[in-house]
Amino acid sequence: MPLKTHMDEQPTLNLTPMIDIVFLLIIFFMVGTKFTELERKIGLEVPQVTDHGTLTAAPEKRIVNVYRDGTITLDREPVTLDQLTQRLAAARAEYAELGVLIRGDGEGPYQNVANVFNACKHAGINQLAISVRPVTVAGIQPPPASRR
Image 1 (cartoon, rainbow, N blue to C red):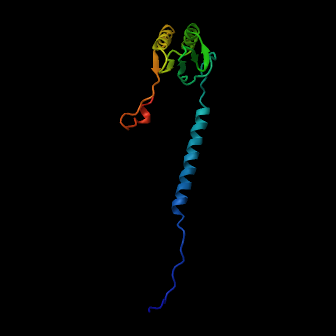
Image 2: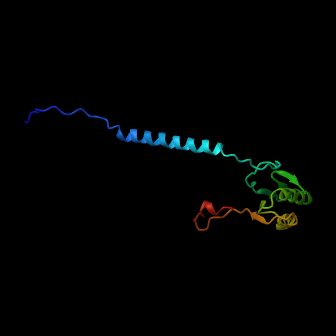
Image 3: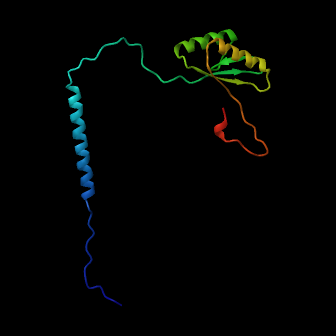
């Protein structure tokens, strides 16, 4: 059995990569601070405009439900066809690219859904979608992404 005759070196921690990263971060923040100081010193007076509100993202699609008995709701509020047309026209005046999702009862008369489509047309809505639920055929389930 061989005997150990020499001492092992003590493990050391190499700090060089960490010091390099710290120096790079210091340089990055120093340069970034310098650019913001230069930008503040620019003698430029920007023009003034009236405040018409903030820019906002596109609104969510409005949801119209058509029930079996012919009841129509717009975003869960019961409405008549005339009220639906008026409210959608007002919403379209605020945002021209407004979309509407129509969900009709599969057991109800299709005429009710057609009346809602016509009301959307009169309100000037161009982006219409209809919600359906896919069925399984011979045990094959459609992918969830195909649901609309």
